Amino acid sequence: MNMPQSVRLVDVGPRDGLQNESQAIAVTDKVRLVDDLSAAGIRHIEVGSFVSPKWVPQMAGSAEVFAAIKQHSGVSYSALTPNMKGLEAALEAGVREVAVFAAASEAFSQRNINCSIAESIERFAPVLEAAQKADVKVRGYISCVLGCPYQGEVPADQVASVARELHAMGCYEVSLGDTIGTGTPGVTRALIEAVAKHVPREQLAGHFHDTYGQALANIYASLLEGVSVFDSSVAGLGGCPYAKGATGNVATEDVLYMLNGMGIETGIDLDLLVNAGARINLVLGRENGSRVARAILAAR
Ligand SMILES: CC(C)(COP(=O)([O-])OP(=O)([O-])OC[C@H]1O[C@@H](n2cnc3c(N)ncnc32)[C@H](O)[C@@H]1OP(=O)([O-])[O-])[C@@H](O)C(=O)NCCC(=O)NCCSC(=O)C[C@@](C)(O)CC(=O)[O-]
Image (cartoon, rainbow, N blue to C red; front, side, top):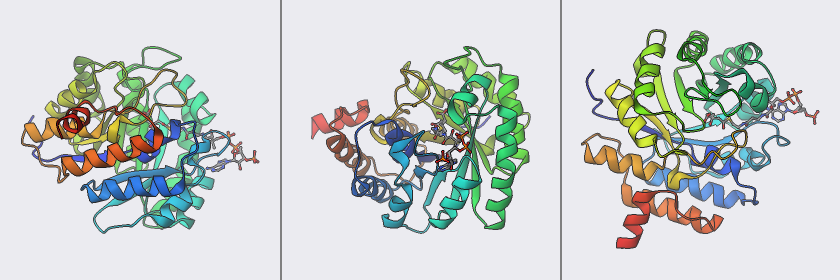
C-alpha cells in the first residue's frame, strides 16, 4: 500500500469539540473559530449539528452560526443531521454538506440517538434521498469502531457491516470513529482491512479521540493502510456527551505537525492554526489540548 501524498483534514472542533462544553458559548465566538480555521487553510469544517437541543444544548444555535460564517469556495462547511427534521433545518440554513451518524454498538446507538442500529439506518434512508435531490453531499459516521463505553469490544465485522450499509445508501465517505480512544495501531489496521472489503479505502476517514494517547499512532497505522482523510479538532477540543471520560479528538495541530514532517501535503498553515486554537482556548478558559501548539506558543 502506498503512503498517501496528500491528506484532507476535517476539523470537527466547532461541532465535536464544542458540543461537549457546558458553558454558554456566544455565536460570535463559534463563528470566529470557523473563520479562523478556514483562514488557516482547513478545507472541510464541521460547523454544527441539527439535533435535538434537549439532547445537545450547545449545538442549538447552529443555523445562526451558518448564517454568519464567511463561506469560501473550495471549503466544505458541514453539519450533523440525524433525521429528516435535522436535514430540513440544515437545508433551510443553506448547508451544502451533512452527515448522518450511526454506531457499531447497539448500546451506544440507543444512548446517542435513541434507536437501534437498524432503526437508525431506516431513518437515514429518507435523509440520503432528500439530500441527494437537493444536491447536498452526505458523509456517514460510525461510532465505537474500536470499543464501546457500554458494551466493551466491538467486532470488526459489525463495523464493516454498518459501513457497507452507509456506503450502499449513498454516503460519499464513511468516517470510522474511535469514540473512546481505546484503539491501538494493530487493531486499527485490522479494522481498516475488514472495512475495505466493502468500502474503498479512498472513501474511508479516521476519527480518533485521544483519550488513551493512541490517536497519532492510529493515524499513522491508517496511513499505512492507504487512508487519506482524518477528522481532528483544533487544540484537541471536545469529548463526547455519551461516552463518559472521553477526551477530545486528536488535535489538528499535532496531526499537521506529523504530516508536515512526513512531507504529506495538506494545504494548512500551522502557525495560523495554532492562533485559531489559542483564541478559542482563551474564550473557553481551557488549557490547550495540543502538545504541538503548547510547544510553539511557549517558543514564541
Ligand atoms: C436523534 C434524536 C433527535 C432522537 O431523539 P428522540 O427523542 O428519539 O426523537 P423524537 O423524534 O421522538 O423527537 C423528540 C423531540 O426531539 C425533537 N427533535 C427530533 N429531531 C430533532 C432534530 N433533528 N432537531 C431538533 N429537534 C429534534 C422533536 O421535535 C421532539 O421535540 P418535542 O416534541 O419533545 O419538543 C436525539 O437522540 C438527538 O438529537 N440526539 C443527539 C445525538 C448527538 O448529537 N450526539 C452527539 C453527536 S454524535 C458524536 O459525537 C459521535 C461522532 C460523530 O463524533 C463520532 C464519534 O466520535 O463516535
